[in-house]
Length: 240
Image (cartoon, rainbow, N blue to C red; front, side, top):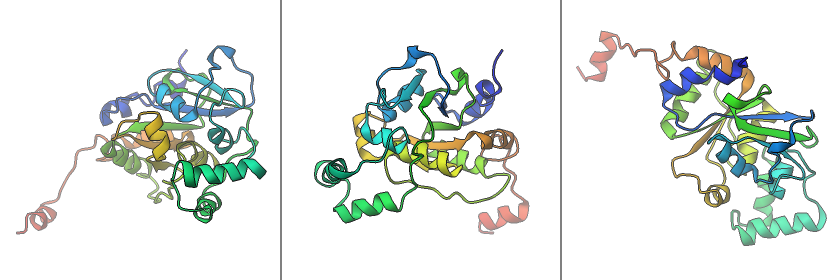
């Protein structure tokens, strides 16, 4: 028997024309089947999950040290490891100017969910056996715009987004910790290494917001509702 979350996004995906599969991410301490324990970078797991693959990621199978601690599977680096990370971000990746700007990037951003769980399940929503904590859409800018308007159609609360930082932090950790929908482009290193297309945008929706988002599709013009323009407004738009 299908789980409710495995099919509830079908109509939304069709209306918006999203080609990639929505990705389910679940944090868990439960034991899961070992067949999906392939060593992988979290930023790559998102890409592969959007194409149909599933992963069980823990401290041993997370191939990226940054992803490991950004997503709470390990402690943030300290001592020599922290100094090495400072050097890498400023002199290696050259993503920030100095150790001061690097510190600001870390200190002012959302904090990782350190110690939250033993493992993370990543895979297409349609194949998720466990209820997702968040759903990540890999889409283009127009589809992202529509998702955002559908997301706050009912409550009208503006997004408080975190667009900078690592892909795994902004697309996974920030929505997990805050419970907020987020939109991000990911970090340049992850996009380049994983060969994401130039038009890919990441929209993450906490699963508890998904039913209302889906319910907004027939009601909102960002979904399938027909746009209606009163004659008085039409005259103003046409400059009469």
